[in-house]
Image (cartoon, rainbow, N blue to C red):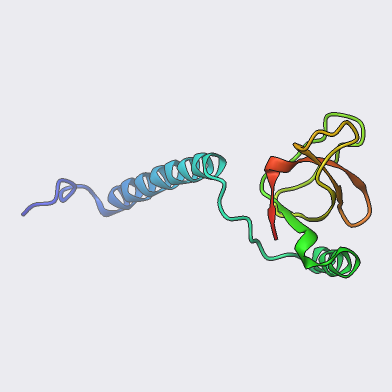
Length: 124
């Protein structure tokens, strides 16, 4: 069987191959980004040493059963709201806010304390 590019000079052929690969690489990258924003992948990411020390201090202060991990970025909009990155670990102080709202939890983020949406936390 004759390849469709069989009569093409070799440099042009390789250029074509390269362009095609680059194009599909870009498409794959775009798809990957879309995929990552759509599916909340498991957040168990390796923690950096500073974060790890913070987790250990939170654990010793509050106990392991109080630790939660942030499942997606949180940007605090109200006073006393925390802005946290996905993957960060916090300790639960109260599963209710000052107005008795159980959808906002008071957490210790290893220094700053404030409220976060309960729906964006999962047990660590």
